[in-house]
Length: 375
Image (cartoon, rainbow, N blue to C red; front, top):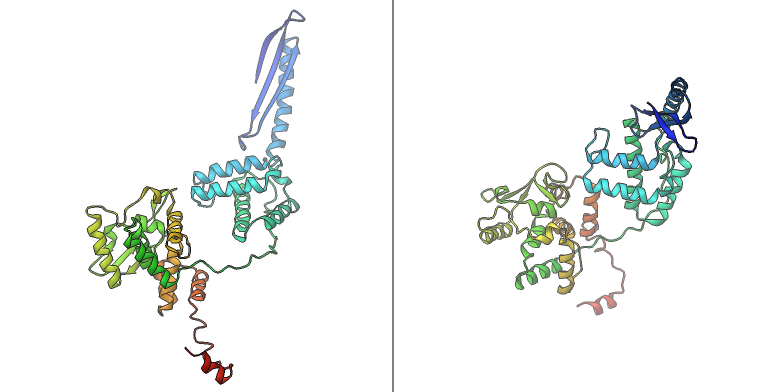
């Protein structure tokens, strides 16, 4: 609050002016400013100051009871989540960025709305739009992001009044056609590794170890020799690496053991000689640290004349081949670090073990035709 003199040139006279500022102790974005000019006496200015102060106080209370704008809530959630606020879900920086991006994209019409103005009708219209535009996984991401921001708003006190998330109750009615996952056959796997070794491709050891262990790209990048037990023929997987967060724990946040076959043990011994005094089992290429491993593999596959696959597919190849060899899916899950049986079911279907031999008993063609067709 302030009362000051100022000179009015047109009237060649001094006047008093009053300025009152009230800041919310609850919401730092709520600031009320009141001004008055042309007051002739100090006594009158004091009276005006008291009146403005009351008006500002009343308006401050009214604004504190209103919800903030959606664009402000979104910005504050992003800042809070990045700092690991206790009211926020624990998300990595890339996920936070992705959530903020998709929400700004699909809720652009909400940005200037107060949060309490965003009801189910508005939220469901957005979800309907998302239904038409994107894949199932992307649709889930948009809704999860919106729900996360609303939940944070309620828990942190930024949203006043009702605690109903407006997306609640919405049912997705569209399902994407399931596609057969990309995979390499055993012949293609052998072609990939044989050709890569023949041409002395620098990524050969990385691809070979991925196919023999089922380890994720970040786990391979982080693997060091102190995690390789040659005596007991086991590789301990307990570290991961991403270009966003650096070195850390594995995706499932637990360690696991990968048994070494004779082939893998011999490969690891050769790799140990090749790496010399390096701590890392594999050479950490600059392009790998930049996340270019999928592109490099796809380009090599095309040049080799085999199915073009991304790097993560090598993990699926590992699982599928073990299942085809009769290894129990539960054991494969332990070795590769899968917790979700639903994921494993895809590889069981790819391996075809559930239906293998089911049609062997069928005898439908005429006997003469069968004999003719025999090779």
